[in-house]
Amino acid sequence: MNLRGIVAVSGRPGLFKLVGQNKVGYILESLDAQKTKIVANITNTKLASLEDITVYGEDEEIKLADIFAKISAKGSTPDLKGDLRAYFLEVAPNHDQEKVYASDMKKIITWYNLLKDLPLFTEEAPETPGTAAEVKLAEEKTADKKVKAAGAKATASAKATTKTSAPAKKASMTSKKGV
Image (cartoon, rainbow, N blue to C red; front, side, top):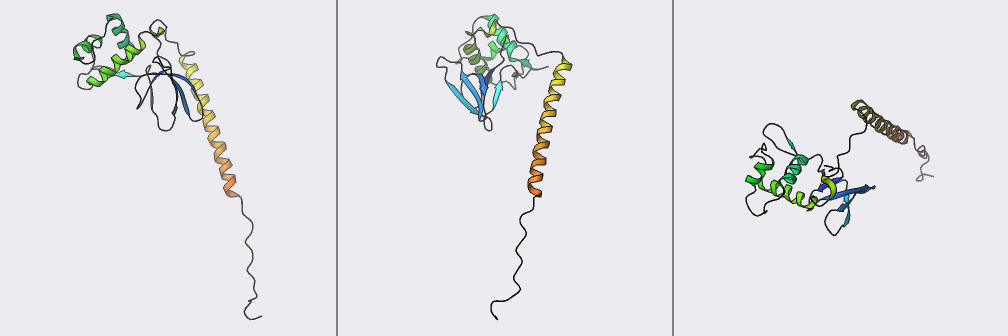
């Protein structure tokens, strides 16, 4: 199952596909029939990738992709107005019943209903590029670039603040009153 690039946006219903990014924010396309495009501001919008979402479990957290796979294998989803606890115990038997609320269950089933017609369930999740060492090396390189960029900005601002302004004009020693 490939959930990469599918995000939930805080404060907006439905799911979105991450199309790109610009200076202001992320460019998102809705997964409903309208296919509307929006720009989610980086500073005040929270995005949650479905690939990273987990559900509280009794022993360990349960990945959303695993729950979607079990719902897909089951074949049908219940009515959202009914009691979802019994159904959710079948598709996620080890979830923490105190921490997972009915609204969470409703949201997961709604997301599944949006995604079930897309080819995401037949696609394989892309592998991370390279071995763990290569991934760590790539992360270190990006961290080094950020440190260098921050250092360059700091030295530029330090140079800007150390510049001296024109010398102050000397006060005139003669008084205009007594001349």
